[in-house]
Amino acid sequence: MTSRTICAACASGLLLLSGACGGSEQGSSQESADDGAATVSVTTATGLAAVEPWARPADAGKNTAVYLQLENTLPDGDSLIGVRSEGAERAALHESVMEGATMRMRPMIGVALPSGGRIAFRPMGPHVMLLRLRDPLVPGDTVEVTFDFASGRSLAVRAGVRTP
Amino acid sequence: MRPLVVITLLGLSIVGCAERPWHGIVRSPADPAPALILAGAADRPVTRLRLDSLRGEVVVLYFGYTHCPDVCPTTLADWARAKRALGADTTGIRWIFVSVDPTRDLPAEAHGYARQFDPAFTGTAPTDAELKRLLTDWAIAAYPEGDPRTPDYTVAHPAHTFVVDADGRFRLMIPPGVRADDLADDLRRLR
Ligand SMILES: [Cu+2]
Image 1 (cartoon, rainbow over the protein chains, first blue to last red):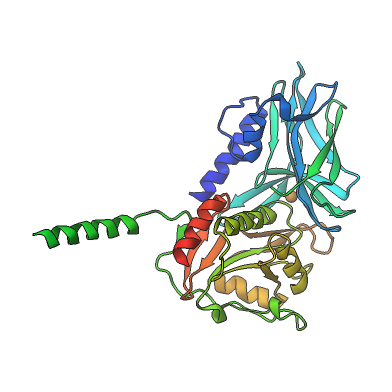
Image 2 (spheres, helix red, strand yellow):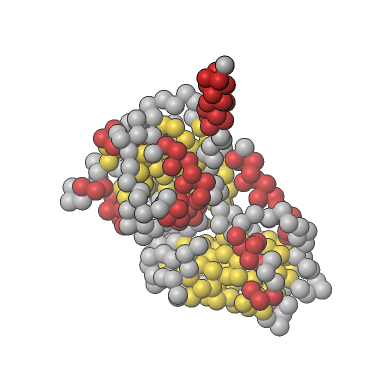
């Protein structure tokens, strides 16, 4: 039953990529996104927007995750191909997945972001993983991550650090 | 006549209580919890762990690793919220984080990590030999993914929080995503 719940969450995340933003997604990031435009913290002229970015606190040298929703309001689709951050030795697009009774992480490569579509990064699901933080992240800090797209566009996002 | 009615009602209410569903997965039969004995760090007694010495207390257990970016901190933050939901008096409940990444985590480090979520949480880490034994005893999986000689490997680990009751029986498995209030509710019933 549990793995089914998790898989349903995964599946709804995938559905979101095709622009089918129904009410099926789980997690707190979805609730806050529904609050409307007031929560859009970063929007760029490129038509790509980051909604409610936040990062977990963690010690220097450790790993952490950044969560947000990426939205594409452009007339054309794009594809997320990478992420980078000055705040860590390495950044990666990851997904937590439950297999049987075991939790694993796997890399996400080339995530489609169609016109009007959205990618939801959320706890226990897709996340931006920051590996080996250069400095500790404590609540109140911010950390910048930059998303790179297949079109050559990029989107820099400043995420506030907070405990969920 | 009247006493009979009272008894019947009592019986019904007992059945009603017994059927209130748990939020975690109930283990049936609730066998004694497997052994869990970790030597810990010599200079930090708090990182030593002998599960069978904790009879009389409900033990909330998680097997993770301190480099875990997403699932472990989400779980421990949920524990912290559940602990707050239980109110000021949380005596009788032990919250223990056990690292399954002995290559990177020392007992004291795992302890410091757990305490970041709540000062009452404790953490420890096994030796390689202790890890091997505990994975067998608990019938759980944990293994590095990626090259463990590089700093960026990840660790697959059990998804559930395990709950051992005050009699030392392995009672509940709390799936990821169970709300903190619901975890608190289950723990309140076991305490
Ligand atoms: Cu990850």
